[in-house]
Amino acid sequence: MTPAPPKRIVSLVPSLTEALFSLGLGSRVVGVTDWCVHPAAGVAHLPKLGGTKDPDVAAIAALAPDLVLANREENTRRVVTALEERGLRVWVTYPRSVGAGAALLRELAAWDVAPEIVQAVVEPVEAAVEAALRDAPTPRSRVFCPIWREPWMTVGADTYAHDMLRLCGGENVFATHSERRYPLVQLEEVVRAAPDVVLLPDEPYAFGATDVNELRELDLPAARDGRIHLIDGTWLSWYGPRIAEAIRELRPLLASFE
Image (cartoon, rainbow, N blue to C red; front, side, top):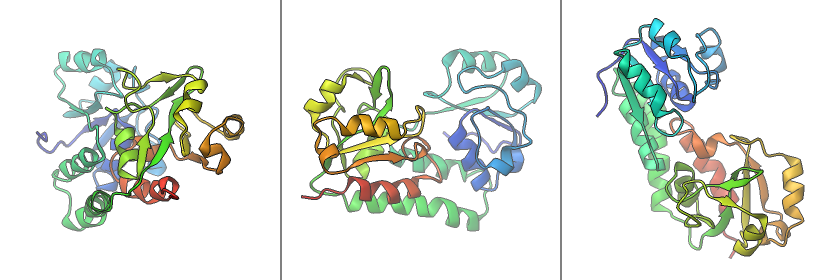
């Protein structure tokens, strides 16, 4: 259930910070994390309260917010509990699908957002998701999308990133690799999985040209066909106003050539 419209918000979720500003709610934001970097001009002069995993609870409380926005995956139960023990209202979000991310944006828009902003920001996201669901590609490209290395880590089925890949025409080769939401894999397993496409995001690990060159040396369909791509990591992890852009950019990269 969406909380009553707050007047003083601390956001501990970078993508939701951006969403608030996109919806014209930036004036209500009184504090953010060090990782809340968008929109740059909007957050430049706001108090920075530490990382998403270890924000300064006392500093948050001192700002007297009437709502703290958190996320089950990005923030810790320890921090949420500490905030609640100080009497603060915390809304813990947890979208694990692109549709749920779009629905969360619509929920934020219920905080007295002007109809013209809803039309400009929320409705294009909802339309993009609906169109992607309606025009699901067949066949799908087999995709490997790591999010870390040393050790190599990728996305499992129960994640927002997996659902974005699926929605855009990808078949996640490690969707059911293990019980971990973010499976650990060896490069030998990547070779056996034979992905048609490899996507290398720039967050949380900043993959770069060196990683592309390393993977090009492997016996992969993606390497042979030149389909190893560096991408904007927010496309796979920032729910909210970036959803439409993510779908628009990822679908061509995952299009099947069969």
